[in-house]
Length: 192
Image (cartoon, rainbow, N blue to C red; front, side, top):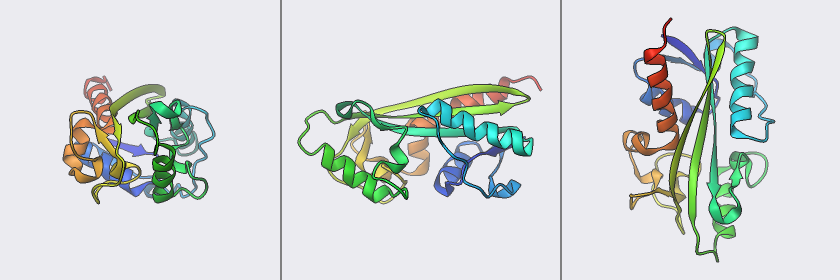
């Protein structure tokens, strides 16, 4: 099976391909979609739908898209839908992490969760899948793997950051991994 993953984020593409080895994942670049699809919704669900609908309507492919947000309890679930550009334009992970660590500097509550929503446009129907990974924001960066906020996020039950885990280890417990597992389960039972 071939399906388009509506992202220009090469790190995300690599991570998802590793989680879906039985499905041929095609990138936006592979289908000639070189534009940045605007994410103008106020929710993760809304942004995932916008991206999936854009590809399906303009290119006619079965497609899935995701949006992910880091929701920090002490910051009323911020940065949430604005996670990628938390420190402003252009998106910059180092600046985002610095801003978040500064805002949490004198706060005891460091509970947070990553939440991913996947919108799948498949055979003219749309389906949504969600994955959540609870954990905490560390006081400094650890590890060199991963991307985004990975160096300062430690999932519950672990003493390491996402950036210290292999892609396989992270995929088992991560928000995106959980949402992808639901996507895989759906696709494996769907009647074509």
